[in-house]
Image 1 (cartoon, rainbow, N blue to C red):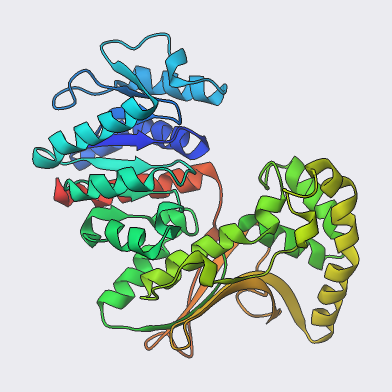
Image 2: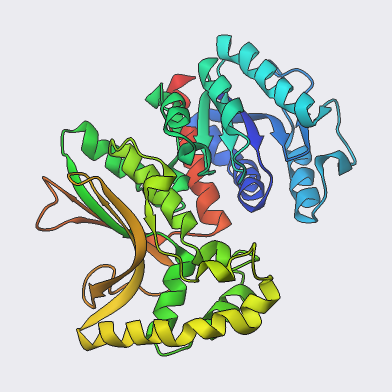
Amino acid sequence: MKIIPVILIGCGGVGRQLLHHIVSCRPLHAKQGVHLRVIGVCDSRSLVVASDVLTTELNDKILSEICHVKLGGGSLSNLSNFGESKLFFNTEATKKVIDIATLLGKATGLACVDCSASSDTVNMLKQVVDLGCCIVLANKKPLTSTIDDYNKLITHPRRIRHESTVGAGLPVIVSLIRMLSSGDPVHHIIGSLSGTLGYIMSEVEEGKPLSQVVKVAKSLGYTEPDPRDDLSGMDVARKALILARLLGQQINLGDIKVESLFPKEMGPDVMPIDDFLNSGVLSLDNDIQERVTKASSRGNVLRYACVVECSSLRCEVGLQEFPRESPLGRLKGSDNVLVVYSRCYNERPLVIQGAGAGNDTTAAGVLADILDLQDLF
């Protein structure tokens, strides 16, 4: 039996779903000859860790209770039964993770899994990599930190997996890596990589006002609590940066041209969210509808897309027109699609499409990444 020690950072929607997947897949993994030994789980305030990280684990009963407590908005300190596990807080928790990585990096190895949404994990992850451990990321922020941080994290490419940072569980990163490794240079990439903005634009295309669509999307849980986090385009920009860096571009987030769907005077630091939803977004309806109508008159549709071109080092995200029968033009709902042009995929590009959002899909991608590391253990 191959055993992979795992520490999980982040117990939000994706982290909880990952723990559910790990527990429910025990019989399947046993048949495959692999066991994921979860030795620690931490949130933004605390870390619960097994009593002996070399030989024991957090059992499935504790993992299920962690999911229940976090679903209710509680902290790991609210767990009713720790068993023989131990609890650490704040900076003490971070230090403990490094201590565990130091110990296991020299012994059995360790998979440190970041399912948080924090930019504060990057320094810890760099230390974990230095200690010979593996990292698996659903969190985009470490990979979109400074180029120096990025280069440090990918010092040992075999020890990092981050499929779920772009397109949830879609095989985007692995497909690009296989192409590049086989000597098939990627020329450029065009993609719709936000399920939220994909849904919004396809609904606006049907003639619905942007303001109405945004409110419906928020009520359905498709957007962040403040929809401007989606409408700003910064989440798509981070995904574009990850792709651009994967293709060799040494650029930072500030180098990407980003089109926001609202002006600066409607930003979160200027306009309260209620004002934006009640009046601000209404003032955007006419402009967006006019752009949709103009695109339609030319046989095109509007999509919020990213473009990465290797030859010109172009990397930008924003509204663009696409022919109705193109891969992006046919896109409906919250699907993601990525169109990749390379030497082998030139006249007929590689198209990767499917569900690009959701905790279940994203967590499944993270789990697959962890299992993909098993040959290193």
